[in-house]
Amino acid sequence: MAELLARDAIRLHERAGSREEAISRCGAVLVEVGAVAPAYVDAMLAREQSVSTYIGEGVAIPHGTLNSKESVQRDALAVLRFPDGVDWDGFDVRVCVAIAAAGDGHVDILAQLASVLMDPAQAQRLRESTSADDVITILEGKPS
Image (tube, rainbow, N blue to C red; front, top):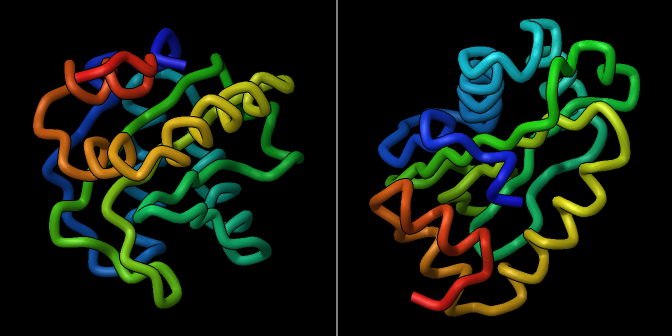
């Protein structure tokens, strides 16, 4: 998973007043790093309207709809940390792992992320990370 995550797509001191603002910020980072066209951000917001991307342990995984794959220029991740949290329909989200995947690569990404989040200590490390190197190490499944 970490091979899809460039250091410039890791933002650890973000703020958002709403779930929609957080998703828009995630999408903007994916656009900034050249992974998606701007239309993908709208698809990320549409996905959230149909199914919440909150997955537990203070983490959400915003991503586009099936129809948005043509907006994906390359598979990539962006990790945004919101130290003050974001109200995600009643859940406190501290980390968003935004996903851009043109094919079925997101299935593997989700499986790897789930293995990190199933370990409460690893999930806490991710929520509290203060460096890009820490985030990459966690997502690679390496011990601290």
